[in-house]
Every structure is written in C-alpha cells, then in structure tokens.
Length: 72
Image (cartoon, rainbow, N blue to C red):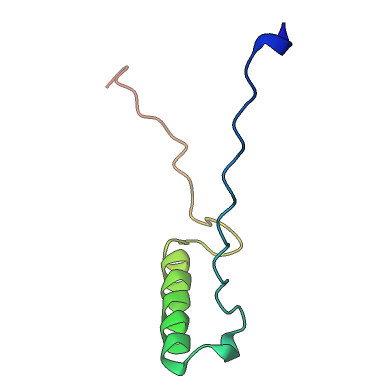
C-alpha cells in the first residue's frame, strides 16, 4: 500500500560544477608544459625498460632436456 507511506523530502540543490582545467597545451604556462613533458617521458621510459625482447620474441634456445636419476 504505497499511499500510506510519507512522501520523500525534496532533494537538495546540485552544487555548481568547478571550472574544468585547460586542455590545450599551448594555454598552459611554460614551466607547466616542461613539467608535463618530463612526466610523460618518465612514464614512457618506465614502460619501455620492462620490455626485454624485440618484436621477434625470445630467440634463445629453450632447455628441452630433463635429467633423471635412473641409471646414474
């Protein structure tokens, strides 16, 4: 019986949205542009330092033999 429940209170007004940051790199100050460029370079360096093989993959010979204790 939905008509016996009290009505919900009205919602509070929405807060004003903050001003978005500038998205174009030319609009930023020069020291901020340099800082962003350094951060991007550090991120790229960290990613490429973890890649240890080339595009051909691991070309070393795999160990496919298995030693046993039988007959030794």
